[in-house]
Image (cartoon, rainbow, N blue to C red; front, side, top):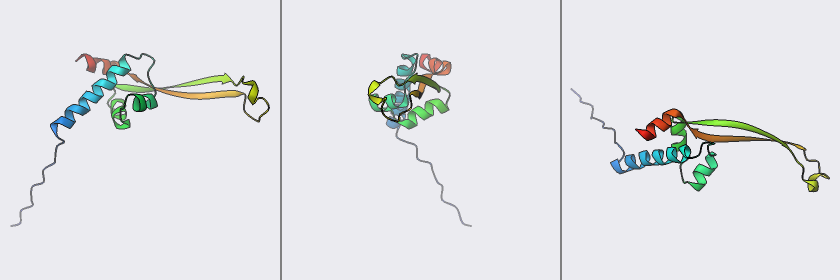
Length: 107
């Protein structure tokens, strides 16, 4: 009779698990302190979060992505001689904490 070797899944070291939870909590705290939300770029570049941490918060329902469309006009006189569109449309995506995220911070 052949026995298959037992395969155990390796768990990440406890220190990395604590760090991940600490990072998630820190991200939620920053988002909770900013009611209008922050862009992913600001959270990654200025605060040092990974895109995976942010995606995990959104996936778990602790944060959400809100998209805003801003329309304006290009009033820069230097650009009037160029073939440049005068109507500008900018899409702004902000990550905001959800009620579930606020409850997770309180808990």
